[in-house]
Structure formats: structure tokens, C-alpha cells
Image (cartoon, rainbow, N blue to C red; front, side):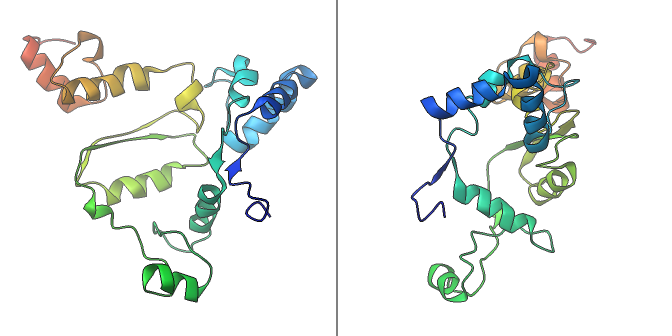
Length: 205
């Protein structure tokens, strides 16, 4: 139906969607908004900063491609672990696009640049098991892998954002040949050790 109507963006940002989302998050003292966010984004008020949901929801999902969402659904439905390309759901169409009746898997071994993988232990969308599997496929190029006590939305709205202002910054500093004492206790141990050595802080705790 969405393709027939040309609605290729899923709930794109706009005046109508912004107003509707903000209004929903004010109803019933915010309880309705909390319920919706708990269902679609596993929000947890003990982890996430929920007081500004009216602002978050006014910008989400901000025009996510509906085909992305369908593609996720196709992968979820697979009876085995694999990262396949888009399935045209027709052997003839798949043959036309891929030269075979079924969609091929992405060749993740072709990725040849350093990757950092951050997962959420409470994430019900990109769940820990799937993140673990993905990390295993990318182990040859992964320079950092850590799962935090966070949900799916938490990476944007958590009360504790040290995953970013400590760990991510430590990685970025390392790959830009910089050192910052504020990130020396990050989870990026290899970077910590090199930075301590460079700064002459081998006894730093």
C-alpha cells in the first residue's frame, strides 16, 4: 500500500507529524507516550532520559525508508543466521537483479577498514545475540566491541552517555593520534595503553 501511494518515507519529519507526536506525549500525563516507546523502542526509565519524549518523538523515525523496515522483517523471518540482500519475493525478479533466484548474502569479508561495534544488553530490536553474531562475522576488522547496559533508544537518550563521551571519543582520539586523559579509563583498552605510554602515565589508574 505504501509503495502504491508513493509513501517511501515512514513517518517523515513535518509539521503534522511533529504536532501529533508532541500532543500524544502530553496525553494521560505522558503515560501513553511511555507505552508506545516501550513497545517500539524498549525504553526504560531507569536507563533513559524520558522527560523529553515529546521532543524525541517529534523527530522520529524522521523519514526512515519503508524498504529498510521491510528488509529488516525479511531478515527476522529467516530460519537461519544470514545477512541477505533485499528479497524481491519473486525468483524471476531476484534472477534479474542478482543472477540467481534467491538474494545473495552480503560478503562482509570485503570490509577492510577498522570497525567499532557497540551493542545494548537491553536492546530488543538489535538484540545482544544478533549483535554477537554480527561481531563474529566482522572479527577480522573489528578494533572495538562492547555491549553496554542500554536499550535500543538509549544510545541517543540514555542518562549515562559515557559510552560516547568516553569510549567513542577514546577511539576517535586514537585514530587521530590524539590523547586525552579524560578517556584513559575507557573500554578501549588498546587505545588506553598506547595513550598512557605516550603521555608517560604508565601508572595511571
